[in-house]
Length: 92
Image (cartoon, rainbow, N blue to C red):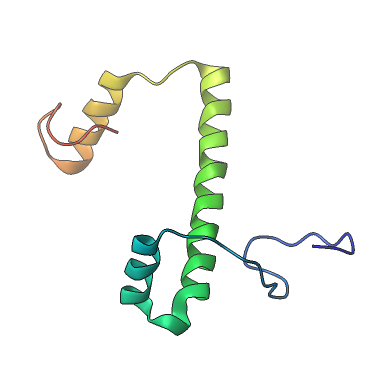
């Protein structure tokens, strides 16, 4: 944006851009939201990606300070939370 104004994701006026997507991706989006919902869908998807990028940065900073996560401790805590046996289910 011009003018030196900073906005948080999701704030500020709308601004048009050109985006190139594969035909299959665009088709899948249109099947979910229709032709008129594509921009809103992409806005929400971009906001989620920005949130994920921020979380990835926080995790990297945490790992740098505290070292890598103890996978066995994570599995044990996941088992306590879900009631599943340790090691069962998908990896973090």
